[in-house]
Image (cartoon, rainbow, N blue to C red; front, top):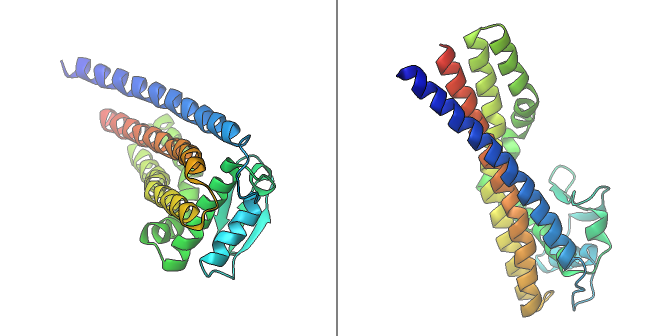
Length: 232
């Protein structure tokens, strides 16, 4: 009876992992689709993503953060180490609703950094450990399973948990940055009332990719924990 229950749990976990993988692909497709749609809608203010970011920072009284170009597609991010808002090609030079929304989102991270937003501070603090966990966690678990050495699997699970924790902490950071972005776009008039709706869709679709990837990571962690307990 316990054996049958174990098989059912395994089957359920595999199904959940497959579902999460599909959801992640759908979320990724969705954000690209929504961005592509609103990348064709020129904002009434006429500013590019880079210009909008500079204007937002100026109006926020932040004068020690630079805005610069970075290669890649949708690789936009704020780097607190060199205090730079890095905007990808599709954002930096585009005067679209999508580009300005994404630029404002990255400026939202700057505002978080300036005020010492707690979730961002936690995420920054665990980044080195999380990076190690994402690279080493699964290989350690697999090695432990191959050697049938449960303590090594346990170590791998704890290491991988750091990467999962980072993704969980990332959720409030990203949602808050989008909230700040939409507020500043409304208050500054960089996007009109009608254009704000498009900005919400762009940022909402991007947020769902974080939700989906976090859920998938949690399910994978649960799978490893159950597998290790069953081997014990």
